[in-house]
Amino acid sequence: MVIGASGAIGSAIIRILLTSSATQRLFALSRRSIEIHDPRVTALHVDLEEEASLAAAAAACQIEGGLDLILNTTGILHEGEAIRPEKGLRELDPETMARLFRINSIGPALVMKHFSPLLARDRRAIMASLSARVGSISDNKAGGWYSYRASKAALNQLIRTASVELAARRPQVVCVGLHPGTVRSAMSEPFLQRYTKNEIFEPETAASSLLTVLRNLTPAQTGRIFAWDGKEIQP
Image (cartoon, rainbow, N blue to C red; front, side, top):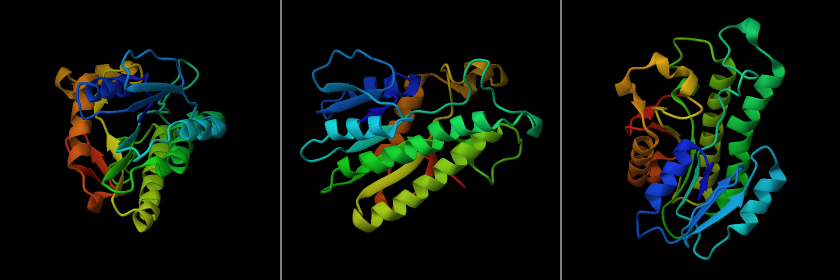
């Protein structure tokens, strides 16, 4: 299952998964309508800001044997001119902060609530959400981006907490966060001038790297945050 299937990373991950004969069934969930012409794909609408939407989608995605992977690729950093990353305290706005927390923290938490029961029970299964290196408290040397940093730090804590609960009941589940790097997308486009060409990943490159990381994870690594290169990011 890929949540955020219409986004740059989500759609790239779907394209890669569909090249494999091991992918027998794939649920592509998105707030925007998408068209994927493959009989293995079921496309469904979901809105992370509406819990009823998540519950309905989860009810429609129950299959015998369970899912091997549930990957949430949603997130928000900016929204036109209405929402921009803050440079200083004077720019903090409670409505902006609340919206970023709803999408970057609360939404993924509700995804774990409603979709983790769909994971396979008789084998290793993965619940993963895209996080960000800037959510690391110990790595924060630059400041700024208050709402985005804080909402991703909250997500990292939610992932860690969920991993403890899931491990107690289902020891083969791996619950992790992923940092994809700087990916060419609508989300990162306004900030790409800060980076060199070699620091910017195309969506397919990021998607391939993340899937490689996921393939190599073990239940002993649950609750942690990993970058695109497989290295752990400290909280």
